Image (cartoon, rainbow, N blue to C red; front, side, top):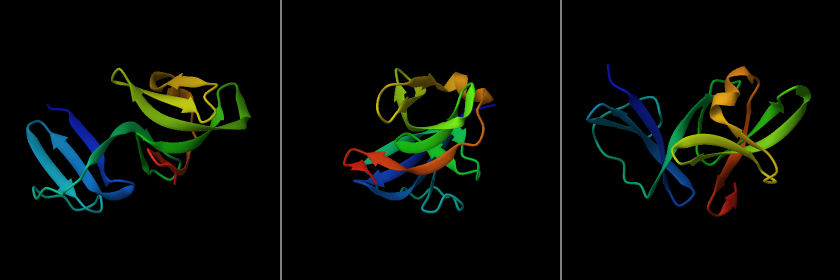
Length: 122
């Protein structure tokens, strides 16, 4: 059995496709549904976080999401998905709170809000 890694591909802040690595094989897609071995030109690859929002949308590095805060389900926090030392983390957009992805197992109801690429929130 081999690991499948996924990436969202961008040129600047424009999403141009997706990359799926299965063992030594690379599959590309421009829409995330139809895959083939034809490379999609890109400048930046955002890693898949392993999370999906409440609408089953895959969430990637650079996405901003709203989540119900642990132990306070009526309080929602806007969080940025990023990676640090290979570990996926969620950081409050204000920078005050950090949650490691392993802590996310018990959180449901994640809502995708937008992207925060190098040029700021889109």
